Image (cartoon, helix red, strand yellow):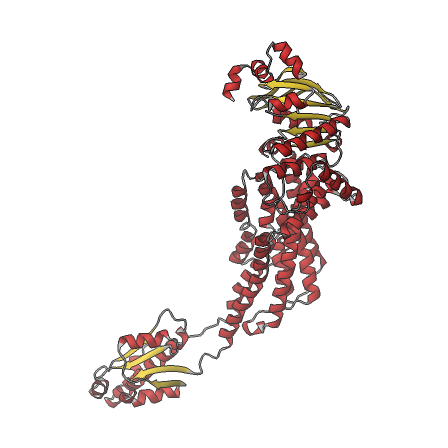
Length: 394
Length: 244
């Protein structure tokens, strides 16, 4: 004779696997996450590795009016492209095409004013919505330096030291590295990687508890010679199995993508081996079971299918909170972190990704903390199913 | 044999059962009559141990459902007022699920499914999924589920509602077979014709109390009214009949 919870588990799984919509959502989350992650990282790496100095291309209107300025720009590695005369709309068009970070337009009277030592106007057109502000800054710097040079030369000609024009001298040092910039990014990625534990089993957890009650088949089920805990356990494991399948697939895919990408370029490391990954997956099994237990308990407690759905979507955000708080308060990894479900998994993966030896204790803690929480949730759900209030509501 | 003695149940302020007593014998079909809200569902749920009584005694073949609900349920087929079908399971899978929950399995379960299917004349829907079943097909499947594990007791909540003439006849035949086998059948119903045709014994409850028990003829004699329907109304009290 099969154990009752196994009978329930097999039936619920069979039913769920026949539901195309649930399966589609499951596949979507499992594949979408790692792919999105890979795409984002790829873009970051691309941007980080693109040499910023070389090949700034600037469109200039009226090149012939300022040969020395053009020469100076060329010297600073800026390529000049003569576009010929353009009106404002044309310039806008050119900027929108993202080919040039800036467009320079020399005013008609530039040569005349320059020769007469009146301020000769250079228009700098740019699109502030564009993210190439470093290149724009580069061009502005060259223009300023050029202006300062000419001014110095003119002052010298009048016998005044150019130094009087510069009472203070500002020198800029940027200590920000790509590594420190991407540190926050890594934190948020790791937080999100475990979210499918809560997503994959969710719709099924609602369907087989609140949904079954709403379809009025729960009473029939409860009238069978099976204990409440056996029914709850079967349903809980159904949601749990889906979550485990989802997260294992997702982690494997994420691992494949992350190991293949040149992460060192942006100061990230992914030192996980496949053996480590197996360990992480095993340690996240209780997390999935906890998520499933929590969802089953909450969905059973809800008054209706709709309420169950909204309660669960809110509950899905709760496990993200510790991770966010930790990264906001910039706390160092501590032992207690392994005792909080979800946070423990994130911490474990982060430490492993750094390539350090983590040891068995944190893995065990990660495993046990979630397992305990899962047991509590299932215990509560079983107690709830036995209560008269629940019987009356089916 | 189901014996109920002075069972009471209160939900907060509401007295759902205020003293129900009756005996349903083996080899008989006992009708449970009562207006809507009389406490029939509460009574049936108490009988299978889903609800705990506040007072009184229940014995189902000598077992108290409060003390050993699983033993009682193994021996009871319960047809609720909802059928509880699963849209994505075929009839055979549905029956197999409940068979396994009742401790059956293997070839024995499969042959029993075929047997029940033949009894209820539902071979045509045995391999189909429940989605799109008609009311009659649904109740047949639910009834098959109730009979599957050969329970000695059957609690049926309005088993004939929504059935066409053919299906009603099939149901009557099935119930008669069960009676011959010595099962104890309790059937809550609103169809008086069915009671006169089928039932050996009638329990009338109103406002959570047993008002009368006896054969249809006895009830008519006691009230001095020829038709069972009129006798029922007079037993329940017209006031409540209108309120329901």
